[in-house]
Image (cartoon, rainbow, N blue to C red; front, side):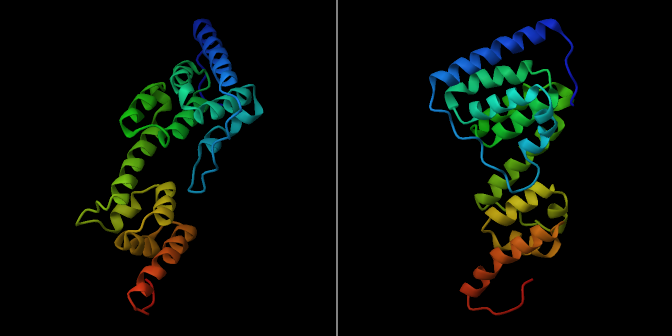
Length: 202
């Protein structure tokens, strides 16, 4: 799984930071709840799936606990830098992108080896798109081509979380998956009915 970094010095540094992370979390007991399941598409757990079948599984469980403990985040960031399982490191970053302040997100992506960054970079961009839409910033020329360029994750996330009628209408019409279209339509119906309109949507 992933692209291992074959370097004894790196392995030693990883063992050291993992041990520091365990100690920090032990001080922060009771244990934190695991990160919630993401129903919007590809998740950190999906990326780390193969790690459940190798020794990295123990680190993934530790990293998930650390993700729920802000005092452990600096150590977790160090662990990402030294993690030898690049898929596991990528999973941690994807998990953290929605937890840390926006200004800190790039530092998490940069902690990954360059070959492990593509997925996290996409998620970084799409989170920015989603947050702008949540704030009501919808470009005048927003249209089907924009929706088509979104990942399945962003389409489902937007269908579930946005209240912008124009975006939901486009998702109900042109969403890539049946689930995204149906979710957008279900969110859209109350908005139309609240205006006393009975027209078929979309």
